[in-house]
Image 1: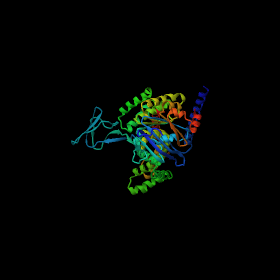
Image 2: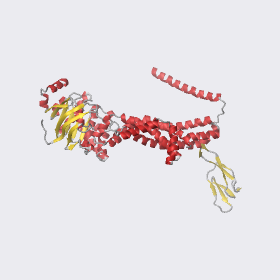
Image 3: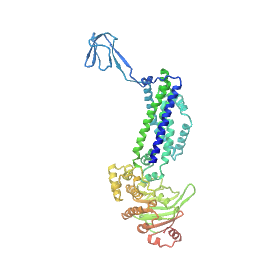
Length: 314
Length: 248
């Protein structure tokens, strides 16, 4: 009982600290001379602005069963509008070409959402390549063949020893020019090669953490090296490397913001563009941060689910 | 030397093993083992008995000498060692079960992947083998939910699933709690009765006395002495006496 009330107390302390931090941010925002205009942000995520439908010809309007039908005076096919939000004509009205008929609310995806989609595409494609690269580099890293081993070490050290931003520039301006790559390909290449180096080290440590007896048992049953790796070592290593892999995948999503320097309109670049049209940098960057958080949070949750499922054999 | 006839299924001749660090683990070890024979190897730790056992399926390479398993040379570069290993089952001190597979999954994995048996067939055979080692009730348990004795019995069933001609046991009861040693030895005894060729490294002198056709004593990388159990345990070889004095 004693212990439980202590736990409750510390949970209360946590809530208080969070409230305190929130209040600090609020007070900070009040103390500066800045007008918050949150209402400007949603339209850049989803644009629901109504567009006006105009008559394409001269004719007459009839309203039937909630549908607006405009019949042409000159034999054109009649215009039928099934859904509208605000009717601007009444039944039997004569309309002329260009007259407003009705307002239709369109759900247009805003630039921030497009940016989010681009970030997601970049991350997913890079992730697939990074895992493949990392798996092979990690296996090469522990290979008994010196050529493979040194190649892998060189790759890992080169990539880990240079900043991602510099690598993106090299991939885009040098390799991109030599191989004639478009922006997206260059961005994906830079991100997957960068992340692959880190995944290679995770794969290596994962495999090395499996007791050598597992390989011996598999080989003693007649499996060759590849069969033993695929059926015995890698499944175990996969489970053990999930937590560091999750961290690396989350890093990849965040690192993808750097490709905005080669003019890929990802979430970060979309954010910059929206700032320049709204003059509301604080709101935009908070919104962008939140959208990144949604991506990384979803990934984190998914991997935790997977970990739970794989723990059946523990 | 006894029993050195052409019936031998294992012929190990003049085996030398020198590790890269200079450690001389096996010194001119020769041993022939006949089909259906149970050979127990005993000796102090570090005597090279496990190393010798592991050379028989090439988990350990040898520096010099020749090994023939069923007339196939293990030192020949053209020999597919994976094929040889299908014929030579091995049971380890630390079980080495695959922790991500159930007991049945452990037993069926190699027949499916190596022998390309259909899953249903491999699992049916696996169920029968697990029944044979007394684990019919535990087929779908993961190794982490099995006792040491149960795990070792699954490991024996897993090795048997490849229908080996020879079974190697590397101190199969040394990692077990005393009350579980019996159940594993019972499975091994029934295997011996079925006529399996077995090479067993163990400290279980009772097992050696009761089941072995021949007992081999190794010390400091040398094969010192080999005899039938009756003569072995009544021998007055001074090195053997010293060792038996320590363990008995």
